[in-house]
Length: 96
Image (cartoon, rainbow, N blue to C red; front, side):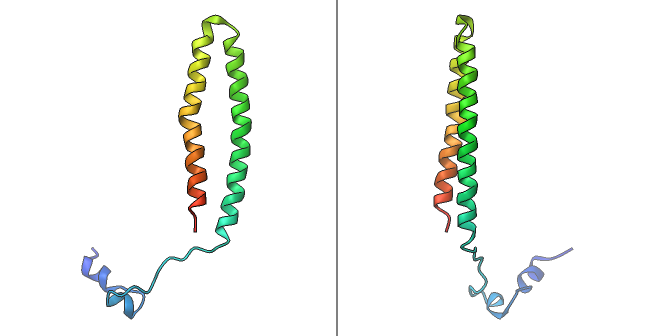
């Protein structure tokens, strides 16, 4: 069984064992363009998804009985997917 003392003493260099900051995680700059490309693909896919959802809602709303179902479908879409897309765009812009 590994003890906490052993974990603390296992450091990558002398500065780490003394408690100084020396090892940090640095992300590469080239991750940002990759993330932007994936975000653009996600936006494009979401656009086609939204189109299909609207077509389905239009088909459902042609019958008066299913009108409430179409409204529920649109509300559900706005609640979940729209919030997800907003979060995705905001988080990609925060990348450093």
